[in-house]
Amino acid sequence: MCGIVGYVGDRAATPLLIDGLKRLEYRGYDSAGVAILNGKGIETRKAAGKISRLEAVLASNPVSGNSGIAHTRWATHGAPNECNAHPQMDCRGHIAVVHNGIIENSTSLKARLVELGHKFVSETDTEVLAHMIEEAFDGNLEDAVIEALWQVEGTYGIAVVSSDDRDKIVAARKGSPLLIGLGDGEYYVASDASAILSQTREVVYLDDGDLAVLTKDGYRVIDLRAKDLERTVHKIDWDLSQIERGGFDHFMLKEIFEQPETIENCMRGRLLDEEGTSKLGGLNMTDEELLKFDNIVITACGTSWHSALIGEHMLEELTRIPVEVEYASEFRYRNPIVNDKTLCIVISQSGETADTLAAMREAKNRGARTYGIVNVVGSTIARESGGGIYVHAGPEIGVASTKAFTSQVIALALLTLKIGRLKDVSVVRGKEIIHALRALPGQVKEILDRAAEIEEIAEEFKRAQNFLYLGRGYNFPTALEGALKLKEISYIHAEGYPAAEMKHGPIALIDEMMPVVFITPHDSVFDKVVSNVHEVKARKGKVIAITSRDEPSLVGMLDYEFRIPQTVDMLTPVLACIPLQLLAYYIAVKRGSNVDQPRNLAKSVTVE
Ligand code: F6R
Image (cartoon, rainbow, N blue to C red; front, side, top):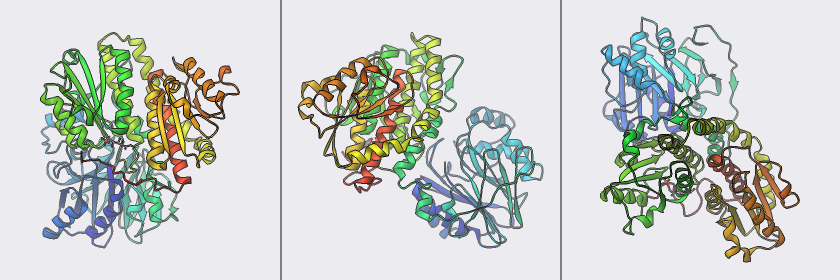
């Protein structure tokens, strides 16, 4: 991932492609590149970092032609450097590919291609596509792309050009958005309409399984059997800023709504249904090594620290290995008990948080094996940890973390499953967890479809001065996360507590002005939380409850209720946090806050 633009026509392609890439900058990326058909062959220019660096490369070494493809990359396989930037080429430099998505079977495809004599230069899964198209090429680019795509598992939005079938772009989509822009004697392909909106407002959205062939004389949409398809031409009447946010008012809302997809991405290719376990390619540890740890320390900051607390609960329950969770900022200065029998898990969306990085280095110095659960590929934590799990949530632009949090919890569940199955967890239990994991994207979507219910609750409480969030077991960290989301974007004071701790102090705060959010799905501590609800109600507090089914013990006790679907206990935070993210979001919007860039906060805290 992240942004694709392509052009074929009579005008100079390079400036149009660069303009398109710049309009995709808001999505976040870490390298960029173009491939231009110059009349003789394909020339590529690539650069790590910002598009301005690519422009500098082009200024010193220009390239011109009337068709080409371009890409901004947000690394998923391999570090964000020039070599891994797209376009990726085949062996002879006659085929160039840009790609969003993940080719899940790239390892086995690559092994086969290497046997056939193909030479690879990058660490990307995308390069595999270029070589597969080369292997299948027999004079017609779309035929070769079709043949290659039949062998691919995973997701893709691609654009391909070849110097052996010139002035043509072949684009295809499965699970990663792509559209065609229609001009007068010129055509575009883009992953996002904002890239081409300054040139045309007429677009054709490709569906999964569609392949488009673009020349300056026209376009065709066909399926993977080369059968022609009818696709409607849409006229875009949105403005640019709306399109960048995919029609959502804020990036945060867009990211909240992306969660069915990002949760799926985190699990993709990692679940072994029959064995009831997970497969984690980046672990860099044998099963024997994984079993040799005496203890696990998880260190992180902020929202990532909350997912760590959920991970602690999961790991201890299923693996019986003692787990400690530490704020990275505390861990680094407190002479922690860590040694070569310790597995230190470091969780970070950005992979650059200074405290987390320092904590990881400290653990390493003391002999621990370090393992990263990171979103940004090639980030410092990802590079310096001995192995890890990329959570594949995609660029998170809203400062308040949402989709990265749910993906971190999924990654921790996958790790728990892996170690648990190596220990005492039965295959039946493993399968039950996998079944629940597989249901999550649909269940999250079900919750999101009812966002309006949360908006109504937000309307009621938008003027509140304080909030309490209470939960137990797996949902004590969810309470912390709900409170953090609210305070950081709405500036309302909010506290998260283990529900039973309320009577040891915070209960003094409860009166008719105090909204109390109970996270109380039907799990093993449900009955205990019910008593706490009664205690709040007895003091006239306003109860907002996240529940999962009809419960006689709660009748008449709840001022507002939001139902989430049932799942296994360890995954309840993934579902319960969604209404809390929405509640924070809607309250903040109603109070007029700058939701995506709340005051005093930075997306990546690279200072101590
Ligand atoms: C809260 C939030 C922060 C981050 C924290 C750690 O919404 O975004 O609390 O979770 O700064 O950042 P990463 O995960 O990038 O290390």
